[in-house]
Length: 152
Length: 432
Image 1: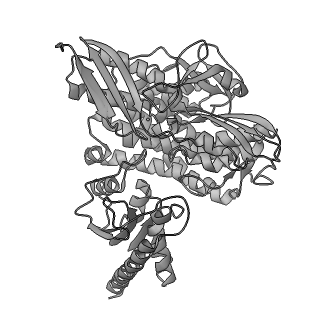
Image 2: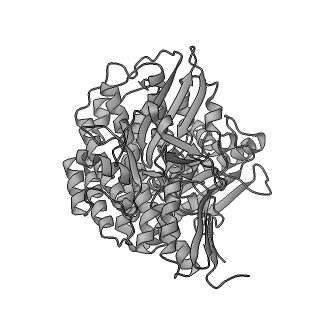
Image 3: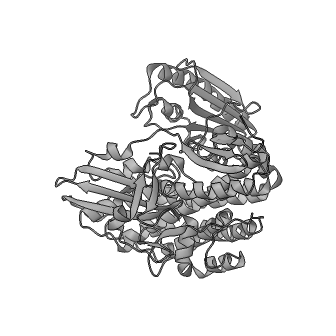
């Protein structure tokens, strides 16, 4: 299993992915299960390739916005509305490319948190911190379930 | 009243290019009246926000102009500031800069060849669809790109927007053992790069040639990357410090990017094909052999074949990276001391898309009082428009859908980086 936090900690709420990864680390989730990524396609595919379960946490912008709202997408329904990625592929295309190449994990869970402030600077807004807390609990349970499935 | 021969095409948002721009074509009574690349990505004002910053900051600030060629920005910025301070960085630190730059060339060129441009030639809407039929090829491209990323991560601290570059050199330099770990992946990458040249050389290319003056840096003895003298294929050469006198930038109403021309000479083209024409003799034997086998010849004036030149440059960058690693000895210090002084400094390096010029004015305590950045795409924009005008003129028999598709492919020949140029792409063909 792998948990991948996608985002930039120096752009406020965009850092929610890495933030959740750090909270999981504090709870004793082993380093080999945790990764932080800038979302670059090939890196994502390398990280999740061969895993039984990959959990990806990323920030998302929505209109109208509900800061801190969590969206849970399964790989069967990658997001149809995509943001245009600069000179590369976006997360949806990374998933599609991995699927074509046979390099998707057996299960891929994508959690996105609605961001409100993606300006320069560190630190998340209160609504996103609160959401990150709930998400950390949920993913910690997934990690635990995965670990007991491995040992069981 | 409208005529049967009048039409208009508009590509609202160009895909598989970096940044936001559009293309508008107006056809008047069967003749191309106007072609414009409309760059509508907002102006970014980087030059203005650099004013008042410390002289140590431009490498980190300008790296953020582009996620695909941050090293180019860092290298041109460092060179310009070091020039202003009267310091020359050479030897082992300069070799490491070249190695980092090789990583960016491999990463950027491979991305463009495999993920953005090849689907055009093979008739796919994108790389995902291409991968369904050419899985092993796409895997090869991803592995090759990853090798470039690995160089960037090791030397730059991370693969995108490196954080380990500073005025004077680096914060930390790698050990010999760390660099040795790159050797095996680079040897495999060399095979993949050679296979890439062979693969793209087999594509079908439209018969289309341009006659632009070609500008690239030239550094006798080796293929210009991180330094050199601006030189054209028509005998013009000038010092980097004189770039401002020779390259004139102008505003045009339809674009937030400036258009550049050579003073008294007109439009020109920079980038891989220009670099190849002026530096071919200094390719590594393996890269030159690959170029010959691909039928490139002394120069390449068919913009569609620029994908072959990029592939040859990837072979060169891999070769050069292996050479630099083989001879590597860690420098005595990771950076040269660069004390500030009042002055003007200029820097130019070969970004994957062409010559990237920076100029800074510093005051005595090292505060930036003025900054000028001339990226490759804005230098190329006028020539791209001129090529498109001719390209469209020869293809007016096509319906709007087919013509639009071919125009998009033609634009991708130049691998335009709109984010860099903004101070850029949608296609409209208007037939009236």
